[in-house]
Image (cartoon, rainbow, N blue to C red; front, side, top):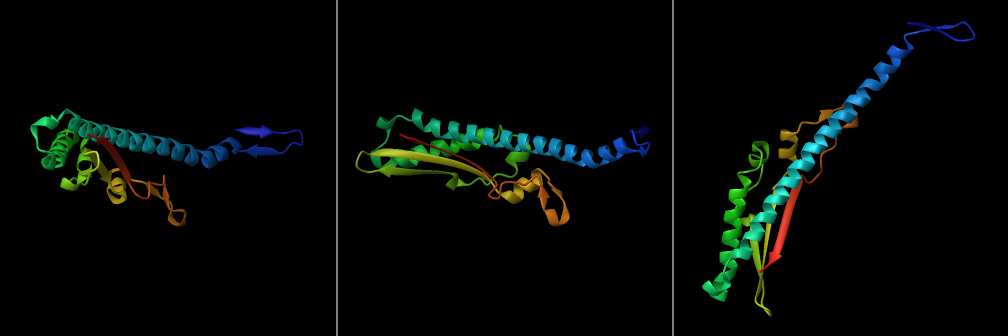
Amino acid sequence: MNVTHGNGKAEDGVVTLEFLLLFPFIVAILYAAGYYSVLFSWQYRMQSVVDGAVASGMYLDRSRFPEQQLGTQVRTRAYSALTELVQDLPSPVQERLELSADNCVTETVSAQSIVVVRCELTMPQAALQAALPAITFGFLGQFPPAPSNGIRASAQVAF
């Protein structure tokens, strides 16, 4: 393509040069949009799982258990629900979650004998980077930047 201006100079390849300069930025923006949409989708689904797990404690009949066992029963029920609900998550998320009995804990507020159950799921940054690879630009670092603490979902409810 040969474009001339009023002064008569020919400027060959201006469009090609602009394309070569802008194309990497456009691809990077599209990649970042896809990266973060997957990341936020996973975090949203993890939040839904922990919400369902702590809500399962609300369906426990308090009159069936002595007050000393109530916290243990609520925690057991919430953790059981958590492990079942995790099975519905996408496999890249399931494989990289840190799941243990410590994911659901209870605390009793003794004055009112209220039990608070809290469930949490965490995907550490290393597992996140293994599931969603970032592009490394040498001295510029990784793009798009992943959350430094990974992703986490937490919910609690008073019973």
